[in-house]
Length: 133
Length: 141
Image 1 (cartoon, one colour):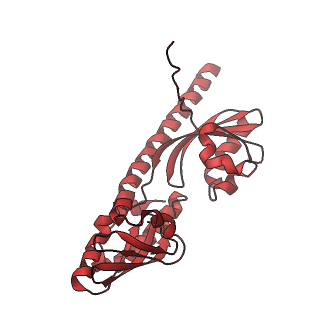
Image 2 (cartoon, chains in turn orange, brown; image 1 turned 180 degrees about the vertical axis):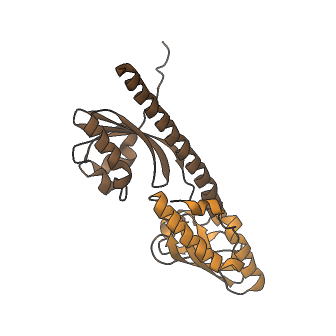
Image 3 (cartoon, helix red, strand yellow; image 1 turned 120 degrees about the vertical axis):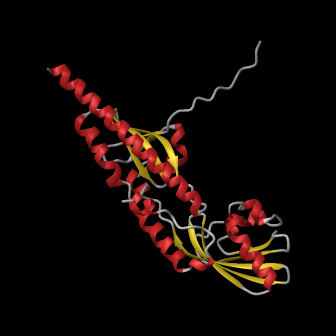
């Protein structure tokens, strides 16, 4: 699920099948209409599914910020019965150009995530990675 | 008669750069990266790469000898060989590691691996360079 560009949204049915996609995510999710989102993005299941289940269980909006596929993005999950609409707002892209840009952007991403620590599903990087040039 | 057997020979990707570091020749294995960039400066194609690569290209041109080095760029750890040739410099590379940017845990693991491979490759290049230097000194003595 690349989130390059502006905001995107997608709709999942009760079985997490993608029924609608709009915005830049059409390029990466459009081909998966009718399929489970976890088929096309298996690594995302561990990160996103708990929030999706929470939205369905409570019937209330859930918002979370996670790093996935090179981007830090904010996701707002809006339930409607068992269906979910997920609004994706990219916040920061990981810059892998050089070890310097990688260290800087990884540091910024980890700082953003640390600021939202209570909602995180992923542990922070060990100190050794912050020692990059 | 036996049916012909298709044989694929894996070649390391390579390009030839002219004196202004423009791409003038692209090997088959390098086509995915360079097919659309013939005639362009390699440093325009890969922004931010000039300070990482140019010193080695300049060294090969200045000395007229091959130069080998290891470098990280764009999510990849590479070993490269730069050798003067007709038309400029032939740059050949091998990918040692690639970052996994799908998740932070994948990134962490692949970054640790990439840094270790980069360090090993840099040491190997240094050892080879030292051996060559010693041979030259020994031969001159």
